Amino acid sequence: MRIHFDGAAQTVTGSQHLLEINGKKVLLECGIYQGKRSEFYSRNCCFPFEPTGLDAVILSHAHIDHSGNLPNLVKQGYSGPIFVTPPTADLADIMLQDSGHIYEEDAQYLNQKKNRRGLPPVEALYTKEDAMLVKPLFQEVGYDQPFEPIPGVQVRLLDAGHILGSAGVCLDIEEHGKKSRLWFSGDIGRPGLSLIRDPQLPEKVDHLIMECTYGDKPHSDPEEAFVELRDVIRRTVDRRGKIIIPAFSVGRTQEIVYNLNRMISAGDLPRIPVYVDSPLATNATEIFRKYPDYLDDETHTFMETGRHPALTFDGLEYTRSVEESKAINEKSGPLVIIAASGMAEAGRILHHLKNNIEDERNTIVIVSWQAPNTLGRRIADREPVVRIFGEEYRLLAEVATIGGFSSHAGQNFLLQYAQATQSSLKGLYLVHGDPDAAGVFQQVLADNHFEQVLYPRLGESVAI
Image (cartoon, rainbow, N blue to C red; front, side, top):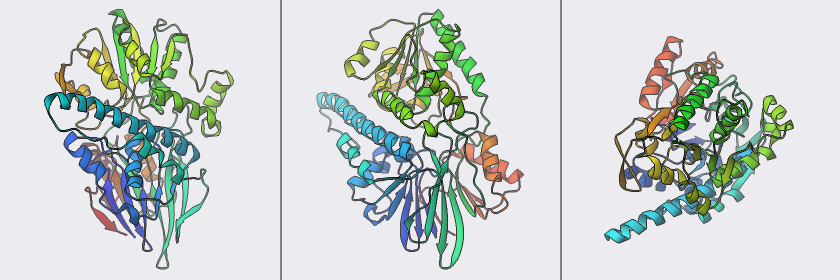
């Protein structure tokens, strides 16, 4: 067996891990790389393998850095099965279509500017129509239901506790008469998060491909994040400002809305308008309703009150149309705007940032990890001038970064996750982590007597 680390290697996004087993090829994930503009198209348009040569794809969850390049894979000739949990099939479908639509819109917007300057046009990475060709390839598999993507490999998907339907991938392999177990963590969730169940730990694993996004630090308690968000909103309300929150449409948006509901219902905040400016987030909420069995006990209780998953309260408005979205920018503060994308790289959030970033009364709240070289990272780093749609804007709004809402495991639980299989482990491969985070976590693992830990480079492969 050989593992090729073709994405999310020494960085967080663009997940792609190619397995060669028994003369067949299985791709774990097919995510979008998010980073430097100069690399975005080359990294995402050109695969380091031949798509038509793949025998199967297994997808851990629907987030775009794990699923977002599937339309290109299919466009370039892949026509085999893509194994997913049922919620992931539904979420990935709407997210990929949304991404295709965003890429088309952003290309059209940029091309209007380029045309006026006599510059050559850019092409959308892929279209909504391209994205719609992916869903027919999904083969839905429930948690802990064995399936055989290729001869000699039996796979189970286990709850990763990250977002609705997310999974760790357990592969029991027989090759040349030798049996072994390979486990891919996907994105590891956090115990105790609202809405979804706790992550399932690996067992009796020989080789573990494991994310380490937050390997350098533990997370603060979610209740601390709740207080931080409440205080940020309070001081922005006092100066009649707007609170702009870039948020992933699946998982993070619902969590933020739920916490705002708690704050307003308890009287900790005035009943200010809250806009979820994302058709995708609205559609995702309906998918939460469709799969109650994938949610935790606390959420089941909440559902019985009729407040979840629509997460409705007075003053909350979900917007779908472009006209509704544009109208928000005509409104005066105080108000809250939650819009995608989570790293502020595309979509409606760019227009809200463009219109509000130079007003000192406003606050931009960063509630998730930001990839290097993205607009979200530049704002989180408080760069004094940032570019949006090719134009420069002064960053005069307050910036607040709140890490406790993360749906990724922090350092402590990552260590616990690895230790669950330490006695049988022959190889540990760290992916989905920047060098700083991975370096700290490698030292933590060494201090806890882990051996054979590899932090593979992009394009590196190992034989096991």
